[in-house]
Length: 188
Image 1 (cartoon, rainbow, N blue to C red):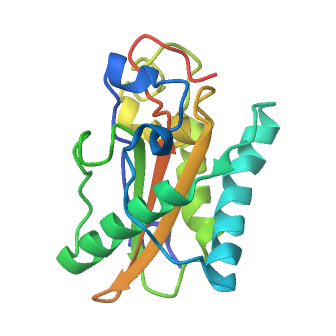
Image 2: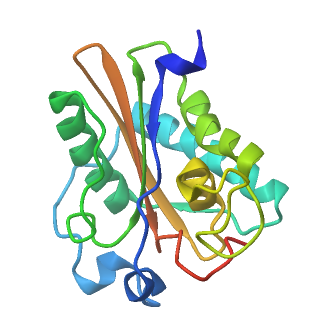
């Protein structure tokens, strides 16, 4: 299947103070208040596959592994369902996503394993230049590596992702805490 049949949108940028994060997870300060039943075995298996795809690249760079956050997963699921209904990719605004980072992906339903979806974020490293954000791409456009840098952002500790399907497309949304892609900082 050709790469061009999948779309991806650059990581949302975090603004300086918003991305500095606090030392307490968002759930501890009341940012996530929805309740949810325990995840099914299928949900846990999908989460493990997505987390492994992220952490393999982080391990290659000797970065701390990300931990799965069910609150981020829940928010990602709500946004993925919204995007699948409207049939296009669009980042949630910073307040709507509780100032977390966000990666988006869309492709033909049922044709892309989640590992490939995440690998497409990671494939952006071919344009990566190790410098301070936003001067991080050999192309001169940070958005060409924004998914990748969010995956490997040193200070990011947690991720939660979800896939929704509608209108012939799968939509992957991943949320990251604390957000990466912070002006003036190096990813790692």
